[in-house]
Length: 71
Image (cartoon, rainbow, N blue to C red; front, side, top):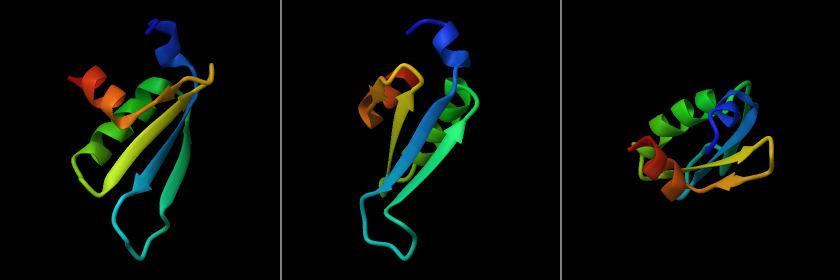
């Protein structure tokens, strides 16, 4: 991934994998992909949440991609 891509806007949606009283998906827009990745990192610690990111270029980053990138 290009360094400039980290400074472009991105959408993060955190999907819930277990039934809960909150909505099944929580979408949010971030000013930068870097911010979206940081928010996704927090969601990865909860097995009931699956973060997916869509970049400004239309790339879809899966939970496995995010986990690999952050490690």
